[in-house]
Length: 109
Length: 117
Image (tube, rainbow over all chains, first blue to last red; front, side, top):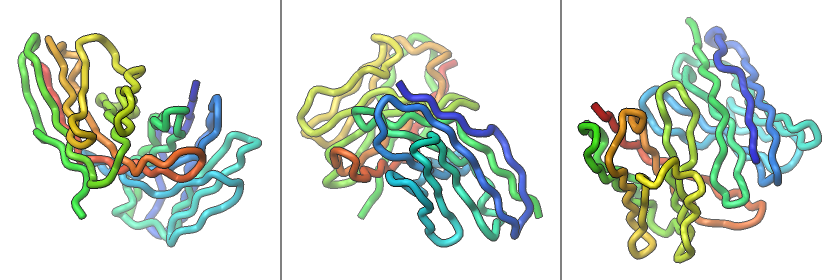
């Protein structure tokens, strides 16, 4: 089976950097996704890691360590619009995603 | 091109009634998933369709839930004899349907918010 853990809530200040951690246990590894979900909206794709290391995409970066079962999402130069829930997800054998409970990020002015 | 669309956006029903929720996938996407998101909970997988293969129903919570996908395109999720605990946002996602370790990103529709009174 799959098990995904991430913090429930985080708070950061506009312009700062925040790191959202995710630990996972999977029966087979097929990569790790990060999604962003604003309140009342659908999740939108942010990043995908299948190899160890850091993937950078603008202000957002995602890191993966397969040996440690660990990933993080790094958000730089935080903006108010980054306030959202960030979901860590792992594909199962049928490619269905198992999601963590999500980390609710609040960006303060 | 258009994204995943779902209808209705909101559905209020009485306990015991049947409801049908519709998902229109992105054109060319062979894989289609239904998820459920209850208030304050993570997304929960319900059912998966891939092309013409038999669906993976392993996530359906009870036999009151069923889904079909006609012609490999539009999908309908049916909940019979709805219960209050069925109240949730039902999300549909579709993907190209790549296999192995290739990235097969799922794109989500806006969801249907179901309220069972």
